[in-house]
Image 1 (tube, one colour):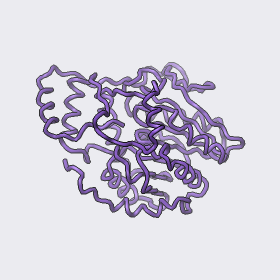
Image 2: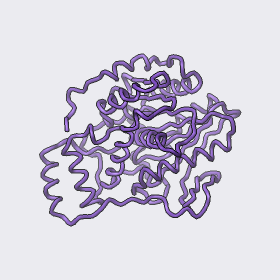
Image 3: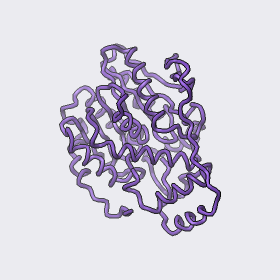
Image 4: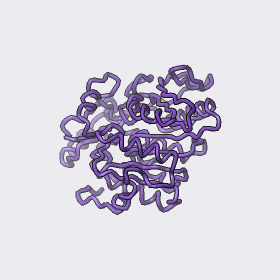
Length: 341
C-alpha cells in the first residue's frame, strides 16, 4: 500500500495550487453489462461481464478446508504462494485470483470500485464452494484484500463462508487520517486523477524479508506507480472497512504486527475495539511483536502460517505462537505520535 507523505506544509501548498486547475473526476472501471454467466476455467475466473481474472490453485488431497485469498494494493495472486504451499500440506486447498486492476487482470492500475470487488468475491466463492460441497470455506485477505472482505461481509449478498482471516487489514479510514492528507487526496483526485505516485522517499519498511522485497521490485506484475484516483478509491474502501466492525458477525482471525508501518495502530485499535464489542467470543486477535505489514511473507512467516492452520481447525483454542495472548496490548495501545485530524 502506498501512503501519502506526512508533510502538512507542503500538502497545503499543493492543495492550494490544485484548486486553480480545471476539475476532473476519478476514473473507475467497474463491471460492465452482465451478458454471460460467472464461470471458472483451469486458470481464470470469467465474470458475467466478460472480465478474465487469472487465478492460481493449490489443491490438497482430500481437503478438510478451503482458503480463498485476496491480495493487497498493487499486488497480485502470487503473494499467497508460500502460505498456500504450507496450508496445502495441512489438507487445506487454496485459491487466489488477481482482482480487477491488478496483476494480469484487465485495466491494470485502474480502480474497479467496492461494489465490483465485493461482487467478484461473492461469485468466485460461490463457484469454489460448488466444486467442494460440504467442505468449509474461509476467506483470507492481506491489507486491501482484508478491507474488501470486510466490506463484502456486511452486504446483503455476502459470501457464505465459515470464517475470515484478516492479515493487517486496511482499515485506515478518513476519520483517523490527518485533515491535510484527506484534503490533498480529494483535491488531486478531482484535478489530477491520472497523476501517479510512488512510495520512494518515505522510508517505510513493509517487511524484514529484504530478499522478498527486492523480488517484488523486479516483478513486472507488481504496480510501482499508483494513480491518485486508485488511492482515492482505496480510501473509500478503507472507510467502509473501518465502519464494518460493529456489523461483523462471522468467525474472525485478525493478524497484526507491532512493527507495521503501513496501516497505523490507531485505526487498527479502533476497529478491533469496536469489533470486540459485538460477539467477542468468535473473534481472535493475534498481535506479533516482530511482525511487519507483510506478515505472511516476513522472515517469521511460518509461525503465522501455523497459527492460521491451527485456527481453521481449532478456532476456540490458543494459537501455537501465543500471539493471541498479546491482543489486550493492541486493543489498549495508544500511539502517542499519531496525528489528529
